[in-house]
Length: 490
Image 1: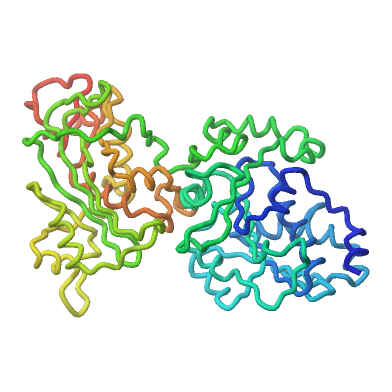
Image 2: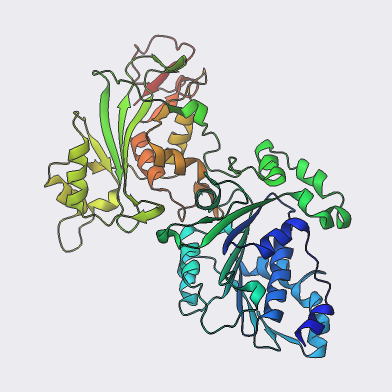
């Protein structure tokens, strides 16, 4: 019956889609560029596997339910239209967000908008996990769902043995999950090569299968203008990401002015007379971030002629408290342990420290900050204003202004190349979809928060904005005219 039913449907997969369908890998990322046929692959694979493997349970996820319905249930190639003949013959039933097959197999159409929603699937036994647009999800959600992938009591046909349970994800560059997807599937791995993931990463057979528009001839036939629309996206970075699947581009980044060529420098000997301070963002279950900064008291040439301007902040050391291989998972250290760790790393004299104000909250006992002070590590509450409002400057604006730099384009905030977690996380942060002037706090924003605190402790305004101020307070006499490339700190 299964073979007769399958014959009644026109299930065609293009060459690259077949690579994913028949792969020996059990944890697959398919795609990269837009138009590569990710959604079609998932629907056709789900239907085929359900028809050939009795009792199979397939869970297909999109982050937002409306997107799930529009992309997979409705339309000429959606489940409802594609399975209409089977539904009419009684081979399948579509009941709300569930597709039931005659042999006991099921496809569940699922959504998981927020991290708390993942617990709806606490007891799920997922034989096949399909995630459409993986970069729309956080790493926390993905790890939780991957943990639910298991298979007991299912008899597999010979051709499928060793290939289930199975995960197939589709994704384009960008989105809140860009960084973790890139690190998990792409960085340091040859495309199409199957590798065994580490035990703390699930231990599955992992593979990245890049796919572009050219790998999906159906798109060119049904929508010949699609390529031109991709080319007309406007932003060069967006074209590179969506047309060519360039994972080194972060479209929609909150700090779209972050450029490693400008903002990352090789470590150099910091002059003894430069003032130094530290900033911290507290975390336990989530990572904490401690950063050490120097304030340039004069122009200095470093590397290949790059100038660190007077007044620039140089982040010369970081301590990022995350579990190795799990970027957004904290070490769960106590306040005392963090304080001791700071003392071990901090041999120089720092003028002051600023810390996440939440660390000063007292709830039936000494605050985190006071417990650190008892160990000899002193902080004051950081200015926690995130966005500009009612005439007051915001931390993100301060950070963006420093990244933009002075009138000559010289950055006023740079990072030693050893600050790997700041460099990894800050460029990948996205806008909050409900509050565009703020960043999405569900992402790995701990190093950014700590850097924001540092910037707010040393407010900076370009001279073009400050020249008309009634009270300048910079380093030159108030009756002196500003010069090109001037700057000031308050």
